[in-house]
Amino acid sequence: MRKLQLDKKDINDVFAMYGRITNIGIEQDGCVAYVVFDDVIDAFLARQQLDKMKLLRDEATLHVRFFNPPKQPQQQTHQNY
Image 1 (spheres, helix red, strand yellow):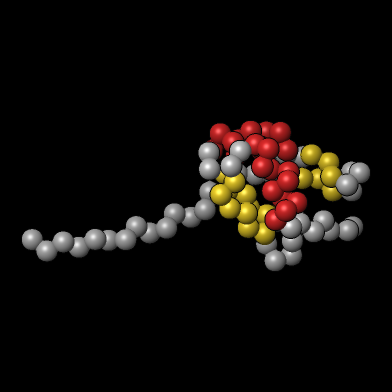
Image 2: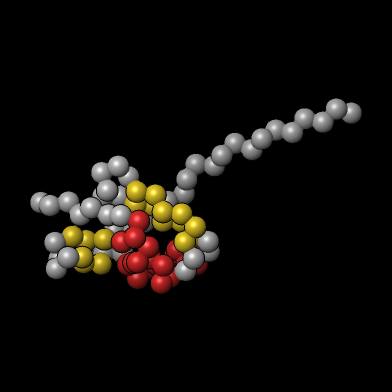
């Protein structure tokens, strides 16, 4: 089975119609991408419309999932009283 290789332009072309994208990250193998929208509603609509969409004459299927990155620890601010 042939793997579909993704690039940022391809991802942007597919997802940008759903809203403003703030970041696109692609795994090293080019088979997994992370798309970050400015608005969660846009992400929801993109997932709803694009999940399980057939690509390249049914040789590949696009799977869209929500990803919640781990929260960054908040910086502690110390105040002297």
